[in-house]
Image 1 (cartoon, rainbow, N blue to C red):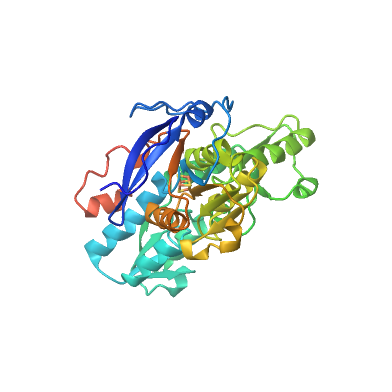
Image 2: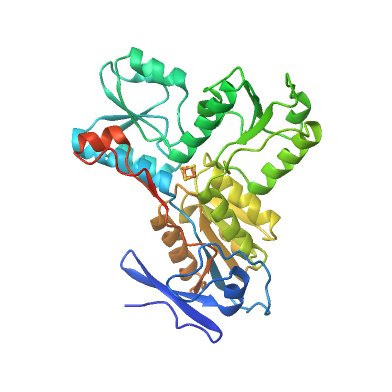
Length: 381
Ligand code: SF4
């Protein structure tokens, strides 16, 4: 049974979503359709990103729900990998670092017998160890081999792509300027591929510290989960210093990160408050808060759960935007919608800027154990 309200005049029903025994009516204001280039057909545009609004905003309490949001293909694959390993081999299953950066996902897996470790040294010799979606350096792989660990690599293929770029440019003896956040696991893994060639550029002031051997052999690469706009600011700074600097062969910021930022930008200006569901250690989720504020949202907060919402954030608020980071299951988003509905924000309007069709096959070494074809294609787009 649909418990949401009927679509308002000027709105179109975009879909019905079921969660926790309740159905939500998703409606699309015509204005948002124009804003996002969204089609009403199920085969909506993959990349409509026209940002010109045409009509005036409706008033009253409402929720704008970003799409795409939540799980990306890399996270889906990583979580599926651990679940399949649990089923196949039973607990305990060792995972180096958090498999993905989400408290809820990690807590659930821990309850089912997954042991998250910081270091390979914590894993009993000869055990099975899963590498997380964020990737590892060759030094970590070597340490695992020394302990005779059997490993399954759940590194996202789009992170692996950046590792390969580092190796390629290092082989050609380039200085590699890696734009990313100091201390992030992905950056540690990526720069660990060629530490003597890679320099990390995080803050604007880092650019002054960069020194290269030959300004004609410099390339910039980046972490996959950065703010697109902030990265371009850093690239422009570096380009001013090294005009011959090369760009990555293809975008390093992944499709999921940029799609979620485009969706939040499309709705932010209309939002008094944007709630981003995601954990504090999730880079792409934190970026969504920053992007929402830059794009015109009056206020924005990162929350793990609906229970993290501070009632005072809702004072004087008409339009609440809701989105989630790439490691967040949609059930957490629907708990936020439940929370808002109970307080008068009952109508949910979905703002669609892209329809994602990316998926990745399970790691080859696991497919072999599961008697699946280890040579099946890595990704479907
Ligand atoms: S955010 Fe991007 S790079 Fe990270 S796991 Fe998801 S698809 Fe892969």
